[in-house]
Length: 177
Image (cartoon, rainbow, N blue to C red):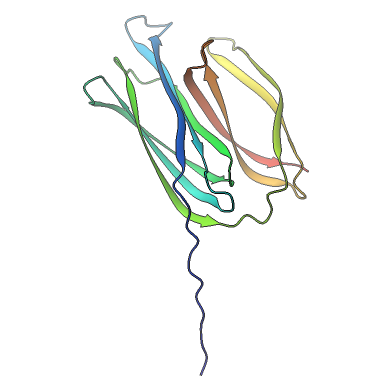
């Protein structure tokens, strides 16, 4: 007879929303319409497990709590003790957004193969883009032993007082060693 041993799945404390922000401003092309943005910063409070397959659902609400827009994002992973952000520019017409309602779901908790590497963004420049808007460019360097694939990165845009105005995310195909 054969026996099978099944390991219990790892568990972790829920990811924490440590910062969030929302902005609204007149559309420069149609001053009667409103544009805006939002950003949410999450932290993994766990010292040894990473959150994987993280789904973040953000509801933009008005002052009465009525839903104006729902947006969702999926993050590959949030390493132990680290932060990650989601957000975007809202090009849909939104009238008087005042608050966010954020729900975070983690598909699985895993032990990372290593926690000794770092990814560092440098040479960060945000400047006006031709035709309106802004563009942010940067360089990411890695101290991980191998190239990293599918790296989620997010630029969080802030007001002079530190408030989050919005964010934009993308996934880098590969970050070489």
